[in-house]
Image (cartoon, rainbow, N blue to C red; front, side, top):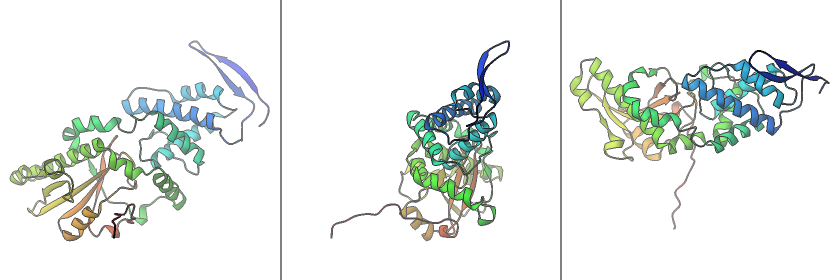
Length: 300
């Protein structure tokens, strides 16, 4: 670290301390990572809620607590945190474009913050569960991820490494409020599409199977194509990006194989902010890599 001076800076509203004349090149400490992660989530909470906040002011308040970091270094670290959250299947500040090649110590710091703030990951789900019907028509449906539109290999591997390490797919699967809200949103969309096409009778017969009959059928919603053919929809919802891994059961795969022409997987992503989606049709292994994650044990 080069030598520098700690100086006091004042304006008409506040006084704060800042470093000038040097910049630290040393790795960020756990304490520094914890401080900047907490600051990031404070901004993210305002960003999600639509409350005004000032990024420059956040940086100025943070700098005196760090080990001689520059404002540019802090801003880049905020971009690193966006990338970590993307890998964890969560929201990030849209104004801080994800920047990769970060150290795993930063991932650990984000995980520590989330462990201390357990309500964070589920905060949107309950609200969406109440308003999903009204907002269903705003779902943007596009093409599924392909080899041609995937990120750079290093970026993709770093994202998938984080997702595997923290088992993001299992977390989403356990989040019943998130799953239910996503299904409700898709249910409303199916009915709206049929009604807009003049198929009111079909729209009235769309069923929320997982809600009415329980899990285990192999799909969540029994809907119809515009020509009246059955459309069996398994909904998988995440607040993360479009490549966030997901869990799929042996029974769901079996139904997908048995009813290939009717079954589809509706992947709903970025659900907490601006819901987007794509559909996958059997065979699923043509679109995704399927990895066995559990086994049934029986006595012989």
